[in-house]
Image 1 (cartoon, one colour):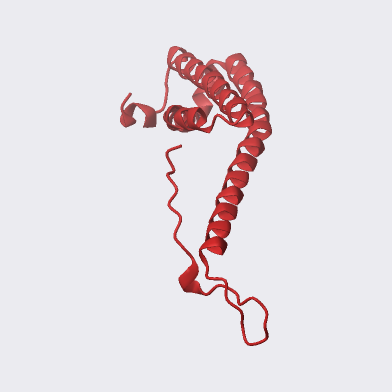
Image 2: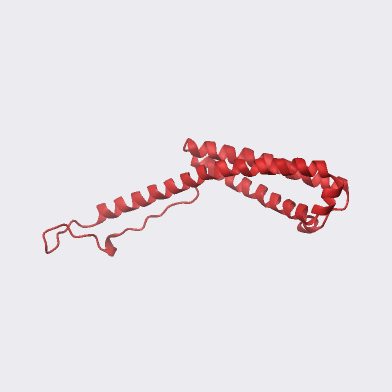
Length: 156
């Protein structure tokens, strides 16, 4: 759909039902993707998890556009389809709760990955540094010139 359709307010119950139906389907799809992504990250299949990110981002953009349209038409939707709107609200609360559960898993995996990269980089720099002793007879710390760059591909 083009952006102008998403920005228009709804005027009929059929439009409201169609929009809420799309939103419910998008929530289910997003939840399945986040759960699959979480499961893949937990077992270390990061490449596959990264591939889901692109599709998930497209769904999320569409979801936000539809939510904006729903918010702009809140009064009409509340009048024309109050029961459907209430069902959607309850499902949206569940959706948010499930996202709050899965997002820390993904954030933790991201943080662990970054720590591993930093650890590898530090170890490579330590091994590449010349082993010298200072005036006190103790090993001298590596200078800035001993630090080697580490290239990491973000495309797992």
